[in-house]
Structure formats: structure tokens, C-alpha cells
Amino acid sequence: MSAPLVVNEIYLSLQGESTFAGLPCIFIRLTACDLRCSYCDTAYAFTEGKKQTLAAILAEVKRQAAPFLNSKFNIQNSKLPLVELTGGEPLLQKNSLPLMTSLCDDGFTVLLETSGAHDISKVDPRVHRIMDLKCPASGEVARNRFENIAHLKATDEIKFVIGTQEDYDWAKQQIAAHQLAAICPLLFSWVHPLTSEQQSKVLKPVPAGLTPITRQQLAESIIADALPVRFQIQQHKIIWPPEQRGV
Image (cartoon, rainbow, N blue to C red; front, side, top):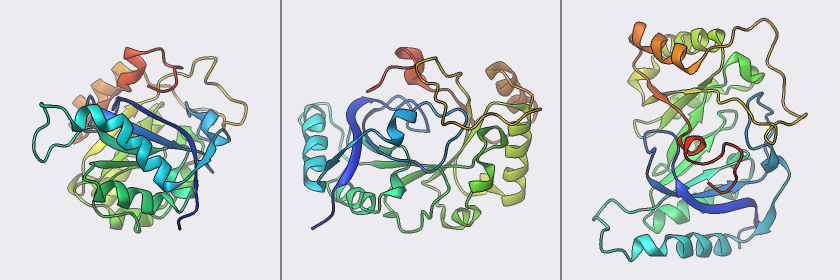
């Protein structure tokens, strides 16, 4: 029998990021993370959570998915809602692996949001792995596990969270050095400023001397440099208050 997972929250909303943005999605937010990125907007998930069995998690996902699964609008081979494991860092809990496999076996399109600091090679190949490469302003650039790049497939995605000009320049360097555009979709996500409710003393400070970049500057730089990336914003923070949970 699988050991329980520590779960922060499970909720149905719209996917706010990635190439799946805008689609209905059930989020399974797991507790704990071993990074402290300067811009993290879910610091509450570092410690808050309750143990749940694999069976209980699957049952809750199916309960929340029921209106879609029973809908007359469902299209064959396009099953909604999506299911995403996020955190925290889902891969810190090893039983996230059988959970993802079970969700795939049940026919869900499964997404994994991971920091890129942990081995992704053992994740079920049916899962869409959305992997960060941490930029300098995160304070966690040294934690990037570049060995993961060799395991990425065309169905995966690489995300750069960009808050400074140095982040942008670093991301460009990684794309060129590792020929990332030939592997999978690339996402440039602008750092949305944290609200007072989202700020936490445990987060790392932005390293001194970096130059902030606005979302307009980021968008215009992508165009000017003809980068093969997708500019994205966190749609859920536009629809709902940025600090609201469960959306």
C-alpha cells in the first residue's frame, strides 16, 4: 500500500500558465519545497498540509471532475479537466510518482510543475513535465539540475521566470547553449510582484545589483530578439485577486 501524501489543497480552476493556459484544471498542491525563490507566491505550501491516501486523492479528483466527465460537450480524446501536480515541489514526495501514473491510467491529461532541482527521469512518460530553469533573480540559480535537460521530450515545457534584465540575458544564454528550442516549448513568465499577503521572510532576497524588467520590456525584448519562446502571464492573477488561494 502506498504511503500517504501531504497535500496542501486540491481545487478546480482554470490553468493560468503554460501552453495549456485557459483550460479547466484540477490542481493538486503538495506540501513542502526545498527552494526559497525570491518571487514564490505559494510560501504557505512550504509547511501547511494534511496527509491523504492515494485513494482519497484520486477520489477527490474524480469528484471534482465529474461535471466535465458527464458533460455532453466532452470531445473524444480531449478529456477535461486537466490535472496538475504543483507545490511546493511535488517531486520531494516520492509517492507523487504513483499518483501521476494512476491519474494517467484513468485517462487524465496530467501536468507536473517542478522546480528543475530534482530528477525528472522517473516521472511517467505520459505526464507533461513543466520544468523551471531558475534565473539569477530567484536566488536559486545554483540549484538547477541541468542533467534533466537530457530527459525532456517534445511534450514537456521549460519555464523561465524573469524579473530582471539579467534573468532575460541568462535565459537567452541557456536557450543557445543547450539548444532548448529544438527540444520542447519554452515559456518566459514575467515575475508578478508579490502582494503583502504573499510575502514571506523565508524567501531569498533578489541579489543586489540586478536591473528590474517590466512585462512590457520583456515582451518587447522577445520580439526584438526574435526568440522562439511563449510570453506568458499568470492568467489567474488577472481574473482573481493575486493573493487568492484555490484559484
